[in-house]
Image (cartoon, helix red, strand yellow):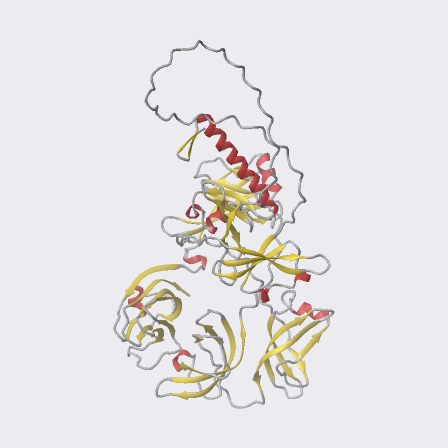
Length: 627
């Protein structure tokens, strides 16, 4: 190596050796980091080269918190660690841990190298004549670097350090967990805005948090917008609703909170085995008065008995009197910006009920929280009716969230068995054939194994429901939007198979057919407009009842609303308030969309009302189903 003006110049061999030494150094440092719970998974030149958290998790299924990237082209490197979400970061993120390795304390001076051998003395030349004084010569170039002396002896191995991992971040030390119950290998970052102190556990008998100093890194540039995540898998189908087949007689009326205990033999009266927090309905009969009640009940305990309590109830009948009104039902949601309240008057359209409401009417309604979209079942009462404006006032007496509390995360399941495919190599037009014994053996080895025929996949849905037969099913759609089911039935004794096909769009099949339509209208001015259902669909449906599927969009600079509802057999524009209709509000120029499923009658009218002018607005009906 030659040094000129403080620049080190190496030949090719020397540079190769230098690169090799640097790589070995990085590997050694990676081992050091791993002992602290950090695993270096790669090295990049700049922070912008680090993949997003989503990209990294997608391409590395075995990722772990503590995975680390080293950023830089030479040591010391900037370390970025994969960290859990916290109060300042709603999602997992790369935390800048700072530079590593930092310079350690000065080591002891190595032993002096051995002195080299003295060179041989050259022969003395003859004495020349003394010449004239010559001019000053040019400065010679730097001589070649001398050979490096041998490496000093290895130092004594130090004591093994205690590893730790960063369990999270908190804003101040008062938020640290109790050191007496915290594992000794957990550490926390205390602070905010990329200014953190690292706290670790000290002591064995008496533990305490100790501040080891600043852990501060350079704030990186804003990362690019992450890509849209992949569609999550469809959740498991929940249990069927719990039903009770008998009535229940007591000598007194039900009250909210009443607790009942049944012997275990009552379990035969349910359609399935109950679980805690199951909700079910039953008929409660007061045998002393003959009055019946419909009771909403909740399973509270299953220890040695079936224990349940009354959540709500409504009288079904009393003493024989005049024929009452038809039970009140409402076809649209109660809505609000938060959870339902028993102290708020909810104004609704009288036409949203199955009949004209009267004061004192009780009904079961559904409430929708417009902020969280959480749904509630409510026991409601009509307290005021305004026939002039087609309005009535509802008060909620009790309510219950349809969505239960989120359960604890379950343990990770065992890795499932892999599936094998059996290829049927017959013509695509074939409707029958014969399997080999090896193919049948493969299918019977696992219920996960499946059949491939004519570029379609068939899965086991019927395992000897009829003894001696296996049925594999394929559901698909052709280029004309025709849905169909295909079944391959295998006779086990003969190895023969038969293909059968059934279209789901056939009128004789009794299935619901989704029909697309292209109704679209846009109007930004305030006011009300309406359309008959046959103009919305462009055709006259055969069924009396229809479900519309579509989208309501609004954008405005102030808080305005757009209402959408349907009425039957009216051609007059409705001028009253429709606070019970599908409502969308917009604020500060944001886009808001409601994707709706709206039940209508084929003789009905679709209405839309905008409270004030807006900058953007449209209604689009995408399709419908005849019921």
